[in-house]
Image (cartoon, rainbow, N blue to C red; front, side, top):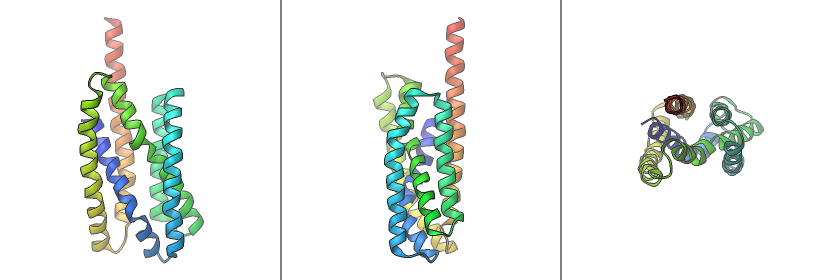
Length: 186
């Protein structure tokens, strides 16, 4: 359930990327810069997908997840608070790096936690949940904007989604380690 929650929350975040250009123009910055910010997200996501996979194979999983979740928090927080073009582009690249948690780390964790046997069945169900969250986020973030005149509520939800997903994943990994330790001791 924790992994399903993390997928739901982080795919919600992924869907909200579609509103970034609207956010940038809404705060009075040019459409050209808005397009550059979105490109920054895509560049960050490409780098994030490659690098998180490498780091998960080479380093402590919890540490890697902490760093990439922090990227998500910093990037989305930056989108909410920053108003200078170059800083918004930098925040976009950073939030793109954080997208690696959803796109690579969650499938990786499903395999680590549940093993090869049930991987396909679990991943397909969790991906379906994620697809629902992604489509709902496009609507809900737009609705929040319509109600408040700002995308900041949506961006703060994204910050919370990264933080809560990290917490539930850490709890799940802790329980897995505890169960493995109990098996080794018996």
